[in-house]
Image 1 (cartoon, rainbow, N blue to C red):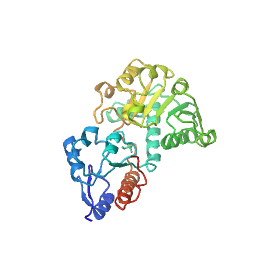
Image 2: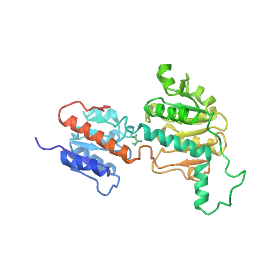
Image 3: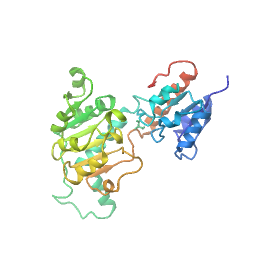
Image 4: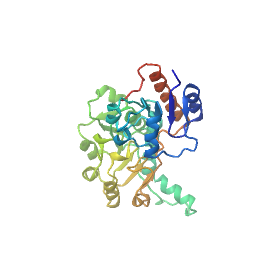
Length: 323
Ligand code: DGY
């Protein structure tokens, strides 16, 4: 049997690209430009495996019509709401992801955002760079203390737990969370966290609300105008999950009207585009989807895709199959 033809949609860590090239007939994307819908469709028709990332939209339309050659989509990332899983399944295309290896780094970025918004790190950094700092003074860029405050976590999976652990044991915060299914209180206690019944219960008491649930239809606009209104006055929102979990227009209104005090965001509804009004605000810290962006994690993610695709073409069940 000939070597499977594989297409990688973006540049990956070179060590992973080398392994893929050794094992498969691999097409790499040397200039790292995002493929458009036509190119992704072509990739599905002409390759045995396509290895996409969060920047590749694969809606149902791309799977329709002619017989698709691709048998597996080895997604580089844990979130896969950019892929229409139902359409892939209907065409018999297996989908895998990369769970586990980005837990710590994503929780770190959530912590970085929490600290940055609370302590006004973004504003301070911009001020120093602009040469606008006039010196130390008691009332300058005064933020909020985090020790002793309550953080509310929405979604208590791997990343939510790692974030809880950092907040409670690292920063002396009280941690409450909402999760769709019940978590054993002993397990929650390992992370210094207590489960509440509803999202509203969390919003009512949390000084910081941090989102750690999957994106996609089930959680689309989970944070909407009503939920912002239900947040504790003066609270902050942190989002390292997916942009579509937050209604960005409602968020902007809540920030403009002072319903909430600030936000730390790593993900957006229409990445890489952000509303101008959001970019103009001082009380937000905006990162370009950096959750998993460390050398160690990106390499581990790539190697997980390699393992999944290798298992698949060896006739085995891929370890991280999601569809
Ligand atoms: C993930 O793995 O979900 C990251 O957000 C990149 O897609």
